[in-house]
Every structure is written in C-alpha cells, then in structure tokens.
Image 1: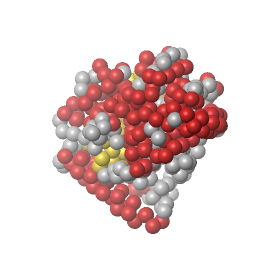
Image 2: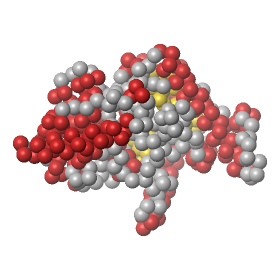
Image 3: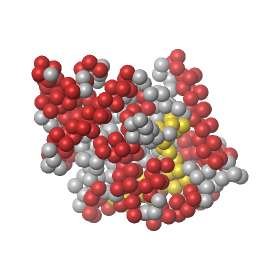
Image 4: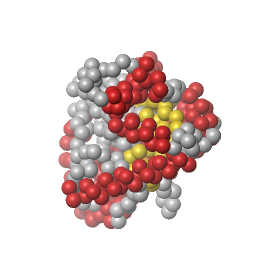
Length: 400
C-alpha cells in the first residue's frame, strides 16, 4: 500500500486542514480546537478499505476529514490508542462504499436493520467516543413513566421537538440506553422502538445512510428538495403521500412513539455563532400531525409531548441551510441533553397564548393553526432554555 498511502496522506493533510478551519468559523470559541489525527493512520485506513477505488473522488476528502477528526477525539480528548478506533471506522467506510455500489432504498416506513449488519450496534460503537455521558442530562425524566403508560395502553405519543444534528437519533440512544434515562423502566426498548421522521438528506447521502439504517424512520422529501430535479417532483410527492398513509396506519394501530421536528430541519447558529433558541415550528407541520391524530381518535388516542435537545456540538451543522448533499462532517466530543415538558393540551392553546402581531388578517383556520404551533413552540423553547440554564449551572465544558 505504500504508494497509495503516500498519495492519500498528502490529500488528507491538505484537504482536512482547510475543512477544519472552515468548520471552526461558526463554532464557539472554546470549540475551535478541533482535534486531528496523524495523516498516516487515516491514509492507511482508507488504503485498507480501497477507498480510492471505491469512493467518488469528490467524496474522498470529506471522508478523510471525518476520520481524521474522529481519531483526533479518540487520541487527544480520551487519551486512547488511536488504533482502537480503526475497526469501527473501517466498518463504517465499508458501509458507505456498499451504499455507493448498491444504494439502499428506504421505504416510506423504514424499520431498523439488525442483520446481516447490526446497524444499531455499529451506531452505538461509532458514537461512544464522541458522547460524554458524564455531562449528559435528561431533564423532566419524571414524565417518562406517564409516556410509557400511554404507550402500554396502546395509545400514541408524538414528540414535538427541535433538531440540532444528524446525531440526534444517537443522542436519544445514548441518554435512554446508557445515560441518565436508563434508570427509567423500559427505556432501552422504548428508544429502539422510537420512530423518527426523517428528511431525504439522511436517506440519500451515503455518508449518513449507515446510521439512518439503524433507526425506524418515516421518510419524507423536504420542501427544499422536492422540486429538485423537476422530473422527480411527482414521484417524490407520491412518496410523501405514501409516508403519510403509513403514519396513519401506525397511529390507528396504536402504541407508536414518533419524534418529529416541526421546524423542518436543524437549528442554525445566529450571527454570533450561538444556538440561543430553537428554530421556529412550521404551523402546517404541527397541524398535519394534529389532523392525523384526529382521524384515528375514535380508535386510538394520541398524546403530544413537547421537548428539546441540546446536541449541536456533535457534527455541528453548517451555519446556513444548503440544498446539496455532501456537507462536511467534523467529529467533536460533546454531551447530549434532552428535556421533556408536560403534555400539551391543544384545546387550551388559545387561552394560553394571545395571537401574535400581524395575524389578525388570517382566516380563522389559519389563525388556529398558527396559535397551536406557537403554543407547542413556546413549550419547546422553555425546555431548551432549561437545558441551557442547566448546562451553565453545572459548568458544562461544551454548552451553552
């Protein structure tokens, strides 16, 4: 492998340095010391899995910088032998290569893949060095027993949440499987059964697919991507309709827990690089879930729970929303933090919040839709502010 390793080492050093500097621009001051690994080890991993042959040329630098920063966390933050990261990194790159050779097609309702490759175990092993469980918290844990009882009765639970990183599903697992939430009865089975509403980015980008296959997903095409290319618009719309049909079936059968971000995407930093508030909820998204719940209300009751996640340190999102696949991934160590708020009662939404300025010209239906979304968002934001306050109070090295 010597000549190949030499070529890859040169590419890794040049491309990764530029990528790390670019990504660090929007990170908080204390997060700008992104760790990197010896280029020779990264190049050796890529050579062993024949990455130069199997990966598109434009993807190789992205994978290289991802691996380099990942090993940097293992070596610098944890003080471990960098070679200890090699097995899971090789497995991950091989799964990316397999996705490029033969793209996996996600059904509208995708069930987690445990064989022949256990993607859940791979996800857990990959994320282990990146998640600091000692600094991770679950606020509002007292609500979990109520949620679990609702599910055990065959009712549905829908979480209306913000979303900060592609690793949010892994954050759920870390908290409920191995962290603060594991003390809750049934937490491990709950998080494995949890269904997540996923946009097309994480089901079409080969770098994200190995992790996405580990989860139960309701797969949709986002508004940003449904028109591109125009020739696929009708097909994508039909896919979304099929997904809504699958969700209606799940709610009708009962016992489903669904996590969704009504904002339609990840939170983004403000001009100062801070994540001070969650992204606003889309009223149409909240209304759609309420409509689905009402359609099955004679069969099964659906409960709406507001919550928030503070997780953006893991794979920080770009400062601006893009439409292209293949965004840079920078591995950093951080904690994962979740807060549950009391169950929503949409029948009281109008009494709890006054109409915002500028909504007086909306018709009654639109006004009610905005009111419900504002109510749900206010609870999500309250949960998020509680997480920020807790992180400050405990002296978290990662947040706020």
